[in-house]
Length: 55
Image 1 (cartoon, rainbow, N blue to C red):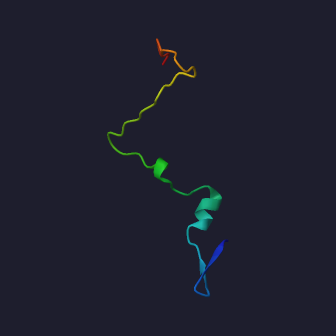
Image 2 (cartoon, rainbow, N blue to C red; image 1 turned 135 degrees about the vertical axis):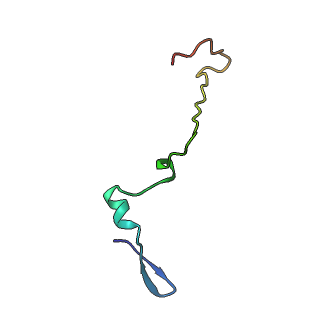
Image 3 (cartoon, rainbow, N blue to C red; image 1 turned 90 degrees about the vertical axis):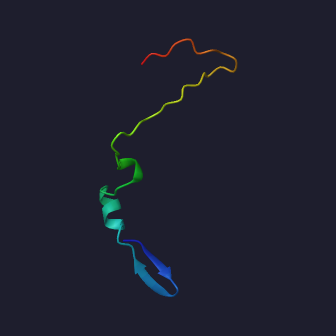
């Protein structure tokens, strides 16, 4: 487990075991009611126009 020195003392981080097991909770894991998503489509060519998008 990682330790961090703070003013000469050792502080054990409480969140490390969950993160090591892959059980950590991140902002992206939280789903809200009515949540929307967006995707931006850009052309890989400098002056090209996007004429259609296959969804």
